[in-house]
Length: 108
Length: 113
Image (cartoon, rainbow over all chains, first blue to last red; front, side):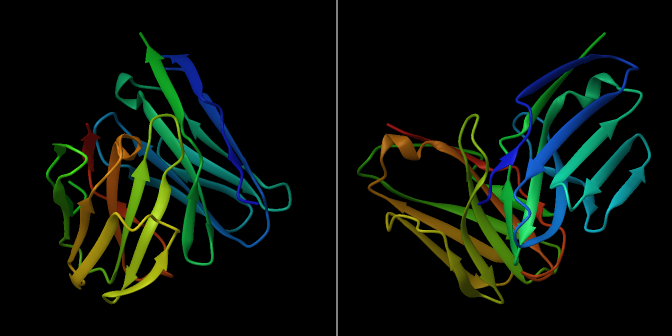
């Protein structure tokens, strides 16, 4: 199956940390991507994991556990501009399958 | 600016109209994709082109007809659409269809009346 599950919505305060979880079916797995999409804009690439462990990129980090079919995106020192939808996507063969996205709202 | 440009950004059409969506990428990529994004639903892959050849048709109804004249341009021709086809249509490109990151355009918001 290709079920990719992530929470629908999350709310956090400016300066805080938020963790967005993503679970997926492990069959045929060949990489996991996180994208950010602001309303009315293009999804933009944030991170890519193909091996287990943590990838850090400034305020954003992404973690992968292939055996558990689990990833998370960690956003630190939240800023108002981080309010957006965050999409988890799993690659199988050459195709990406997306979760429905997690809408993160950052409050002052 | 992602290097992938889609036009028009918004389109309203009747069910008997014929229209086309255009996508152009300036990244030198060889693979291009059409996705459909409906509210609260995951992005759905529609078509994949690699070096101008269609390599994927994800059971898309024939009222959607893609065209890829070269590696930089991708079109989606629309005819006799249904109201449930109203959605955001996103184009993406990548260096090759088996290569990592896909870069997306901002999409065309389509409303079918």
